Length: 255
Image 1: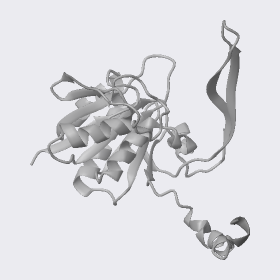
Image 2: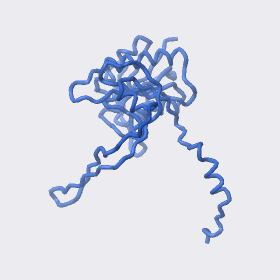
Image 3: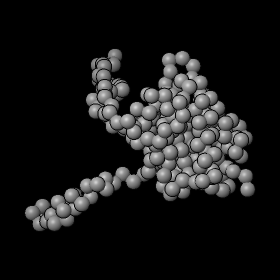
Image 4: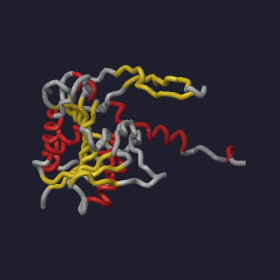
């Protein structure tokens, strides 16, 4: 049976990054692209429940959905593909998704939804540049990782988050999520009618030093590969929280 790969992103179906990625992955088999009709960066794992979604076929194996990457994966699996794909790939994103930023990332969320639906998945992002993006190295890096996944698989409920430098990479490095200290940036302005409105911008932050982190790896010119999983439980403190709250009585709080 031929390999089937499902692609999505959060930069939109017309992004050059997803087109270059599709070309690189066709060496393995069939590639179906189901991506947002417009850019929806930083939507995280959002699922559209308050309105209907529209699906448009743009080419034989290319579809757009007026929703999020999570919407796209669900519609693709339920309505477009006849069988479960062998691999879900999300990207190539314009700009890294490292450290704490993965919690905002629609790119990572696309791969996360694939994992939740039982499919080996990966997300790929490329360092931002002031000029034209060259997606070729990121596409080839993704193809190299995809080749391994298609042959060896991934542990259940594990996705790989790949981040690629714009310069020639030194190789691959397996990493952990970086941590940062963060201060938000919200700009207030006044519209012509005198009402306030707000722009949320990129905040000021500093990355904590960690030689194993994804941020450190890409800054040093490596392709970062970080295994992620959807379990957000902090297992290291379950015992401490348990000892604090298991004996908590509701008596004084109930009237």
